[in-house]
Image 1: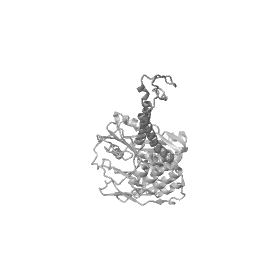
Image 2: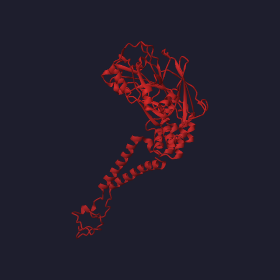
Image 3: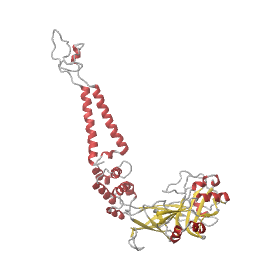
Image 4: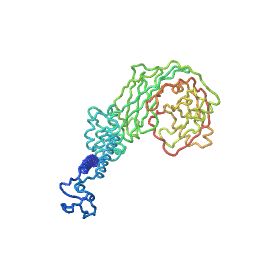
Length: 481
């Protein structure tokens, strides 16, 4: 809504109510006779009465009053009063519905929203910053107002410093709206690179197993406001001093990054250090152009430690056939990209009774002459659980994927296979009763612990769908060793 529209709506609604109230009051109070003799039908002035013949037909409409008293009635318009009152109710209800839907700030001009937003307590539905974001997103704000919104988003205010949780809560909607209006390649958006990143961190607990310990898994995501055309590099320093490196594209798809931690469970006061750097995509040298942000040290969140998990390995020909069906669609391979392959799978195949009490953790390998060239690690609970699969970042051999893309159908059938094998450590994550879902939410109620895990292995011909287009961008990617 433009400033003119907002003022017109606010002042116009008030003025209309005042006018309708005046009309209703005038219609009800009426026009008293003040000594005049008037026709009760058309209100024509009949003039003074004649002592000889005081009642006579109206010269205008021909109506003959029944008594002299009728000629002295007050002129009122009840119908007009009802219409005026109905108009008042309609205007008030329309204004009320708008205020309920969008809040009182929906009646304010955009310039006023820009002025008062820094002094509002916070963000959220129907606040001044929220309404400002709505105006920007809907196109009602002018270009100058959009850029003023960018200034407000980039600088924050004294109580909401850019990058802080309070700032994200208050100005996130405005930032998204401004970027959408300006376009991700607008040069003005480069100033957003100065906003420090924020991280969301969680942990999946580990456990001692018969085949060795399942290490805890670090679950994290980064919240940045980079313009289009920038990539990132994350270096995570874990409690034992070891590091993990991942590539980051904020516009990419798929869930948060999952990193295996040291096998020992972290103590209550241990933390992880996260160092993120950004640079324009396509810089020619590996270390050229990186802009490092200050390192963020965050305490590892509380997580439920596991005692030794006691369960039974399960395997049968029927289970292997069902697991093979999960991957019937095989591998999709794109013509180019930093990660060219994508494994397609349907975990709902295991939703039947056969896997009702079974945790599924799989190492899925695309093999060339028996040598793994692409490895995926994933897990989910079998049976009727509504929880979907989770996975660690896949690792692939880029040269091997190029050979597979160019291979003939005969060569693919002869040399390439899909090997799927159960893994107790991965199954442990699928069996956690309080496993974090994508976005950091846990199930609302405790679930019965699974007492079995799939321990089989199956090898099937590799199904490949080759796509001539570039691979989709992944949000997180682990570089190949």
